[in-house]
Length: 244
Image (tube, rainbow, N blue to C red; front, top):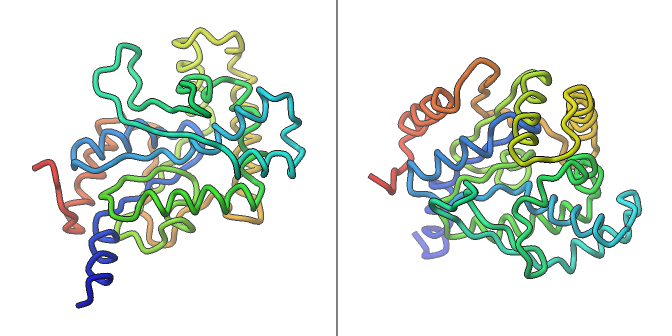
């Protein structure tokens, strides 16, 4: 087998994708899964959130597609893992050289990220970077189109979901912990339902389970319960545990 083919095989055999709507729990469990397996973790949503944050900070209308695409094409950001950080973060996100780890989770970004991420040219640039990141890594990659578009040949794909009400309660809890001003449950629920509609109906890379994805409803499951289900699938597929 040629060296390139061996490299490609290694990359595919150590790739796990997790897709799902907002607040389905995929980031929390994805990080835990990567840690258990000794894989690199990447939450691709931070890329779209970074573009959205810069757009808002520059007082650019998120509906101005051309301006948003220009930001995406010139954005400088970096993601680095964190262990036992004082504020509980799993990674630090640098946007144009500044720590934006929590700013990208703000209500304003939540309200506009689906519009920003719906632009084909923005998604094309982010997908290019995501594939570049996956090359040569054992990776757990989390997002909305990872199993369907970004890494369709991944040997194990998950799709996590939960009712809109449960997801809104989770997002409300996050907002209260971070002392955001806007924490009304009804507003958060409406925003999640709006984002679901945008993400699932867009023409380019819509949110949906891959045909071969393992679908997990997390509505009544704890993160540990979801993690155990995923680890069982990892074992069934014979994927390597690099932390063992």
